Image (cartoon, rainbow, N blue to C red; front, side, top):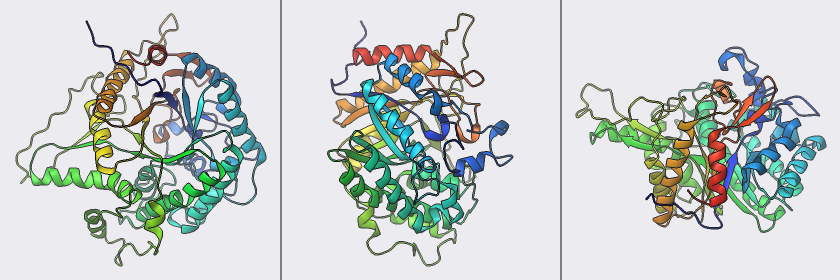
Length: 455
């Protein structure tokens, strides 16, 4: 007889999306241009020339989508606000029609008994602000606080769960170092990316008390992406690569958020690229105290394991243990399916930083299983991915980690950034030509998990 896994009665089961990936209506009703609008419209940036111009047309079909969430029995829905839809110029005049859309969405969710979790910034910065320097400019952090004030004043009476930023590391390193994400800036010296990282964190710290003031009795946090970073052997070279990768993607953001300042080993590492000969000279006197504003939770986005092995001929021994290259063990994003890593990152983050509460704000897998001749979508690999990761999260909870909720990525197939529409993470299938939505078998299984609060 199989063991049944039960979650606490107040555990929050949800699903997540992001504005640019689903909304469409990129230039409708007064919305301003975002960095992702500009980037996607630049030839050669997105696979197949795809854009988010229409995406899932959620701006028009939001009532239908809430109906699907209700059908699934979701307890919560994590979505992001499009900054340029609310403040087309990034600051100043509010676009009331844009704000009205989110007011209606929140009211619709609450009427369906679904708790809204709002992410204020999921990468789609107003292009006007990018033209002024984007996140490399301190003024953008100031503009973010104005934006947070506008949105939390408008929605704060009903929204009680707020995430300031989604994955600031991705914005910094992919947007302002490698250039594979908007705004597409390549700078191998890290000079611009480090300013970006700092201003994102600073804007978070400034915004936290503003949100608390405008939305009494709410909980505020931030979402960081984290992989399970593993050295392929015990060699110093492998261990160093794993440490530096974790430092770049996670510790550089988590350490200052929890009052430790920027990690010294990483500051030294970044300085070796020559971008900041005078050190982190953009950090002002009180900045680190501001960044460490107390929060109510941390959101973690986890997708898999990263094995690190140095290719230096002097590296010995060269051992690694990747999973076999089968669909069960590797998703179509070529990410390793490694559920034990989820237990690992939850434990590591909790015991290292002692956050009050943890949410898995994204976890999911890309598999493009299409509808069969009966219109069913037997996405067994995704269902297995979710089942094994739910079990891994449960193991962490048994060890005392205060995991309060789990948001599957994603509610539905959508625009997957530089991959366009080539990757499908949704538990709901979307036909982009007709905007038909079909519950995949993974969604039907998830509905049962939510209903039983376990499996």
